[in-house]
View 1 (tube, protein in one colour):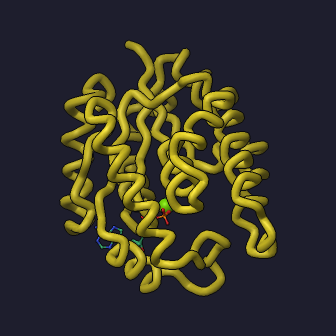
View 2 (cartoon, rainbow, N blue to C red):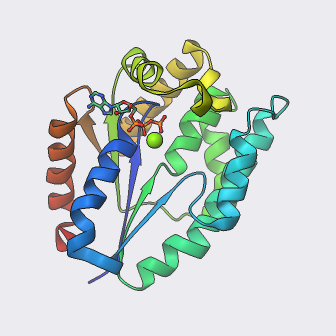
Length: 213
Ligand SMILES: Nc1ncnc2c1ncn2[C@@H]1O[C@H](COP(=O)(O)OP(=O)(O)OP(=O)(O)O)[C@@H](O)[C@H]1O
Ligand SMILES: [Mg+2]
């Protein structure tokens, strides 16, 4: 059985982490060490250290391209140290955000340009892409409302204080990614109740990575 790399993508508050945790609870028993999870930025000690720099609320002076490079550096380390070794051992790797997030947030949100961010990331990824990406589709306002409702002030990081316009640009960039990558990216309606979103995610995974489900 070949390893498979699955990523969860979508705007803030779409429910990616919630559904991923639910999925892990259910798959862990069945797959044991065949299941590896990761997140971006982060996924191992070095990448998590880079994450802390990116999300630090004190780093108000961070330049957009510095930020994009840090994400790419964290991604590189995650691929080399965590994702690829697991895939070579025929495991299922599920990652909370990946390259599409950089294209949407740095390319669209920060206005660096999607193509430029994609091109810059080639140095980090060497063209490596997920086998399957599940996109959590949700209007900007609904996602932001969920976060505002559920997150306490101490949990707010540097990226949570962005404007609605920023998030709208992120959303638009994501729509383009979905449109341009119909083979890799599958969409779930993330406005539904958690149980329904979860069952839609399961259906997609049963269809595309059935060997692990
Ligand atoms: N389908 C849903 N319906 C209602 N509330 C939800 C749903 N999914 C998640 N939530 C709630 O919305 C909040 C944000 O969810 P979650 O952290 O999973 O989003 P996320 O996509 O991981 O966001 P981020 O990109 O900011 O990490 C949580 O408090 C969660 O309980
Ligand atoms: Mg999350």
